[in-house]
Length: 72
Image (cartoon, rainbow, N blue to C red; front, side):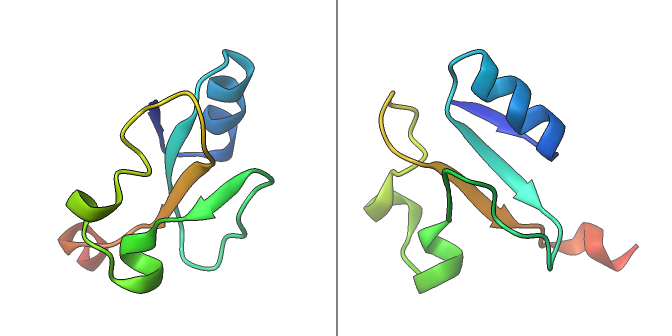
């Protein structure tokens, strides 16, 4: 499972056979094969989900950027 910050990095990770977790900007669309993080989508806690735990199966996971760095 790769952690990526852009569409270009997502494509590179996919080309290498990796699933990825991508941070996207608000308003950016999901790419083909991506799923919104259940924590953001439905409030599911990470410990109860594990969708991005790194197995070889499943969708690529995306979350919208958030946190204190947005205040800059």
